[in-house]
Length: 68
Image (cartoon, rainbow, N blue to C red):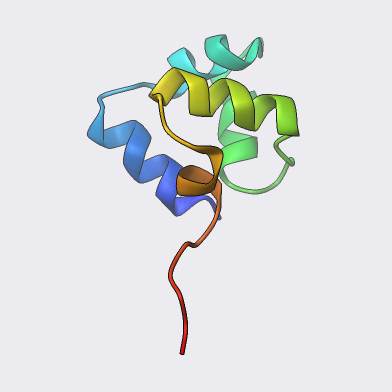
């Protein structure tokens, strides 16, 4: 579901285990559930991820393409 997040994570060579640590999750499986869209990211989670990648939340979690 969060393909953009996964692409960013992989392009920066960040493991799911590292992301779980950033979010304070106990396992990488817990992170995978969020990245797959099975468990929702909280706004706090989104902020932590955006800060970690030094990117705006919108660039990670939203489709910024303008349709005409």
